[in-house]
Image 1: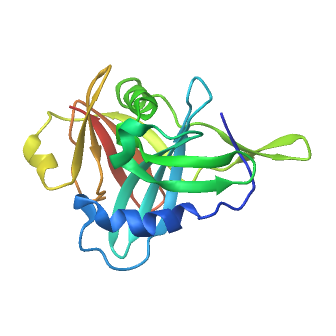
Image 2: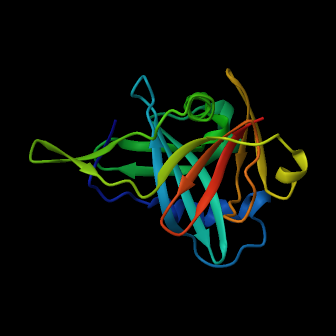
Length: 199
């Protein structure tokens, strides 16, 4: 379960990504402002780390950006720091590219290997927790035979997790075939994309 505070972040998550996204090799040459298309969260069992994945559109391109939010910097991950933001309720937060964070890797592996669902999200209003409708639906699916050729034309992060190799697709394409032994999919009314696969 994720409790979402109704506050204004400074800078906003999109403002952080304006400078960070074009510097990534899998998103080079972009022009235009990033727009939030959808998002989902996983639960950190310890309740310490915020784990969120943003689906970001820039023109016709769609990107998957996993983020983790921490209350203190991790010196070893300097190269994966997206930036910092001020959270009125939680204080300063260090925002990292999730592929470097073991908490993210563990939650992603559970989703890919076991079909673990996205976290339920709530706002707290006058002492009551009100559910937030998800912006997409996550699904677990058995894929076909894994093909490196099928994945080669997409920016792929190959992530070693305690459960095994997970392929995370940075660029998303509704027309791409499903690859991998098992697959994590995201759907909205007008499209379905593959987010990750067991390698």
